Image (cartoon, rainbow, N blue to C red; front, side, top):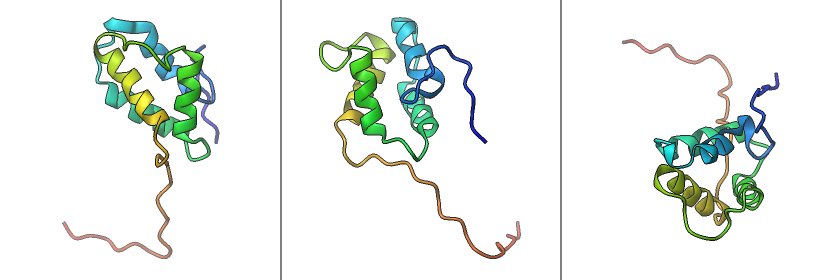
Length: 106
């Protein structure tokens, strides 16, 4: 089942437009930026490379270079820049166990 996002800022590189929404808030964004990056990464899913998506977002929003915005929004941009420069970011689904799982005694 595919997820349908209602945000007008939704794109394959920004599912649900979560990054764009924060950028629009600017200094009013209270943070934490790490939570937004986590949500963004999980929404990307296994078929999208986070580093490539971060690069495209930074280019799209003209944030590849230059000073960081103030506050938590700046932290978000900094994390995106770090993600864009990383080659070891992956999202994978945990392997499913075969057979019955044992019930734990509490």
